[in-house]
Length: 279
Image (tube, rainbow, N blue to C red; front, side, top):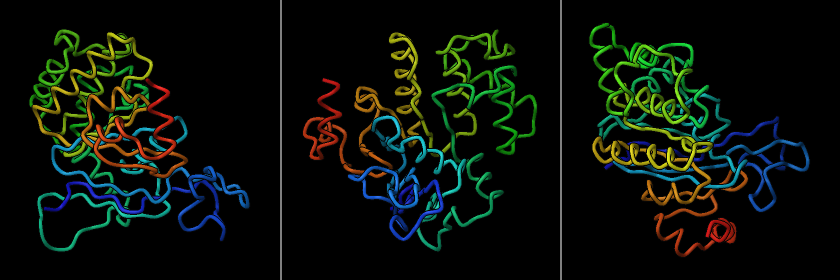
């Protein structure tokens, strides 16, 4: 069975690159900056696979390349090299490397098959537009045209994410941080995406609010069987949500495997440091 999402050798170099750091970038133990030309490795040769219903965690300290990886998969920034395949049910026949497609085709895939929730609601929402309007924007991009159906879908999703229906026409600027994150989740789920990307969704929230947001995400994932990539520096979030985990450092994957295995018996020195620092 083909993976739902397959990423091969995904690389993003910030800089011109040179013979010392191309094609794959600097070795992770040497840092993420080339000492010869100054090129920074945002993401270096990352590969991963996700099947329907999988939850993949991506963990690492600030600057490890986690958010860059997510934004490359979401086609927000242009990759230097690599391949991305999204399987829409075909088990045979040729596949299209989405990184070689036009920006229009990439937007089509993103709008119809992906959803994303950012750490900062300013990136995922128009805070001065109503909550229902934010969801409508995503649905319009995905090809919806019937206004009454769009409004019904928005009301349904806001109710599912614990936003009072009577506040559907209020802008998220009036909401608390936790409510803004829940509106983002509703917007991200509006097009019934095959893959949901979560980028540090609980950072900056109070502990009680974090717990509610995480519980909501876990319940929705179980009910909808949606595939997810969960990016976090918090190992507690990774343990709660993900079945498999990638550990990133300096833009590279230094360890991967089952989440419990990595957190209970880390093999790489950097992973051991991460785990021991959060005990």
